Length: 110
Length: 113
Image 1 (cartoon, each protein chain N blue to C red):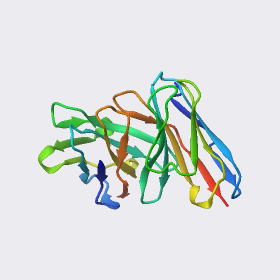
Image 2 (cartoon, one colour):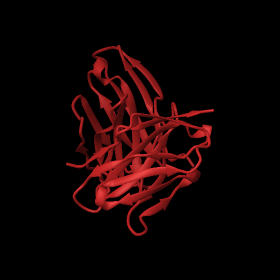
Image 3 (cartoon, each protein chain N blue to C red):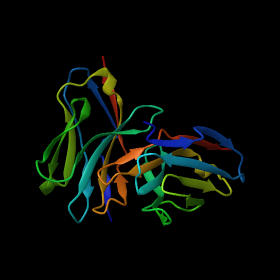
């Protein structure tokens, strides 16, 4: 019963490098999300995808791109990482009754 | 715009004491309300949710929450706290199409022996 799986769990990047966070859910959910979590700021929505083939900006989309590859997978890409993107990133999916989270990806940009 | 406020950043209670975590929301339509718990280094786990009906909802781990429309509040309670309840708690509101969820900034609970 995997639920929402995201990789990698930890990553250190140099400023200007690019990387992609991968997320997959096995619950047949239509909606998927990427959040970032920073101390004292709770969770802030970066992008979401209400269904396969659609994506929309959330509160803090700048510096990120997303791809909804299929119903299961929703990836988050940092094209040119900046220290301000040091954060914990959570992928989530929605069953219409609640939102379910992955275990998080700790990203440090130096 | 929708928003969720958790006024208490940190709360410390003694083991066995009662607990109440506050949550206020701002949302024009009927709110869908949630409480999540996050242990260190972990993702968020759903504790309970409110959609409609009885305003007192029961959740996992002995938690309950009461929806008060007049106060725009959805406070989380537990009669007797256990040391394992030490974690960070997040209140959230979902839009009626469930496409977006808005989270509070969290309340960190510390439990004294």
